[in-house]
Image (tube, rainbow, N blue to C red):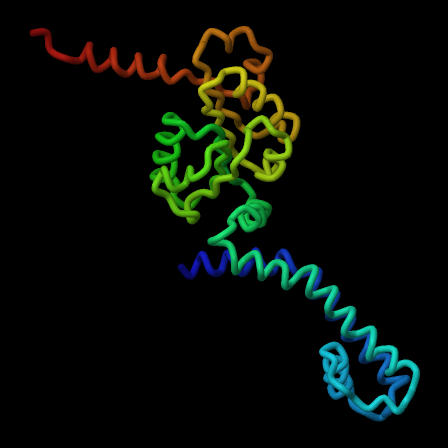
Length: 256
């Protein structure tokens, strides 16, 4: 729980730090202007910074009917509203509603991932792979791409283990949203060989060095493909591998 809260706070701060810096610059600029053009040039910096905050929150301060403080009384609330409304309040709203509308929050989480695994096509094969991978490396960040909703619920997982983005694995926009350029592993397990191959080509264009594991029903296709000559591309046929293991088990059985 503590780890998850820390992760969420890190994501929020990473999303709003520019807004916080802009707000600080606005406050400091107002403080400097009040120092040299305000009603009381002898006032201390701390008091002037407090006055800047009052101006931003539409509180009244002594302006001495001077032009600069009067202008700041109009500018500061507008500036703070734009900075907070565009950034801080929007992000906090997304975070507070993350259990109702997960899509925007999930995009923010995935955007910060690095060295994560991307698994595309969460059918029966993909589900078995995921469960095994989570057992082997429970701390690995995983992103799932599948057009069906509720994939995480079907797997019985929480968002601590994986994040699901609904869409087509061959959609370049979806691949960019899962931060494919920073992934350390991509697994393509759809039941359609053509879809897996199309996605593999698109992933390679964005991240040429990432290891890609491609499921092929027709294992002989791999010998005809240019992709097969890429050292980071690995093809696997579940039927062929299952047959090998089954035959091994059969041959080990004692003859009746």
